[in-house]
Amino acid sequence: MVQKIFGIYNDELADCDLFIETGNDYIACWCKNKETKIVQAFELFSFIESEASDFADLFKQVSLYSRLLTTNFDKVFCIWGHGKSTCIPVQFDTEVLTASYMELMFAENGDEQFCKNVTGNIVNLAVLPSAALAEYRNHFTVSGNAHKYYQLLKGQQSTAPVNKLHIVFYNNHFIVVAYKEGLLQVIQTYPYRAPEDVLYQILNICNNCGMAVNETMIYASGLVDTASPLYQTLRSYLDHFSFEPVDKNLYAAEGFHEHPLHYFASFCQYDL
Image 1 (cartoon, rainbow, N blue to C red):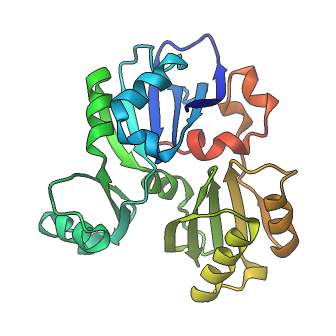
Image 2: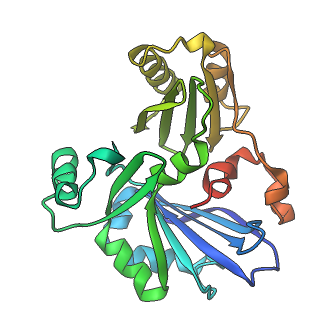
């Protein structure tokens, strides 16, 4: 059953671009003003992963409760939040090897469509889910495709030689992005059921990357509440745990400010 978690709107939806992020068990959509990049509206829907097997029917159900997916926008950008994505150094990227990389990593046979995006010296490759992409193309003029990893990398990279982790939380999984002295070490999606699952992966990544956890900055965003056992556990064990810095001026609708803004930062704050 589709559940609408958030529906936040401003009346100023004209002159906006629409962004749709699709994962295995959620769809998020938001619109930004083309010029100012201010976020005017946001919706988040959750569902059982098996419901996405018939994506056309799922999209129909979501659209019944969506204002954004039933509004006309000149440009629509699709962000893909599934796990079938990998990053490679730009010097090792060739058109000939793209299919080989994806077959090696995810056993894709080359029949799938891929998207490729470059930020800095990193190439992000991702499988495009054919049924979902076809459904979006039936309803919108899709101006671009990118994986969630690309969006995060583009927004998080800096030239500062620091050790840091960015953790993006969803209902049943989280993404970790680890940088050692400013260089990407890991970007990976993990399922979790208990706070200890998250803590274990953080400690394991820091250990494997040779980063002292008590000296590493750890920034969280997404669906984590300060009253939750997850938050309390991470605060107890991680010396430099904090929420992702948020630019309050980017969120125009009043409804955003009724909630902690880190809920929306991982979706809306990073541009494509």
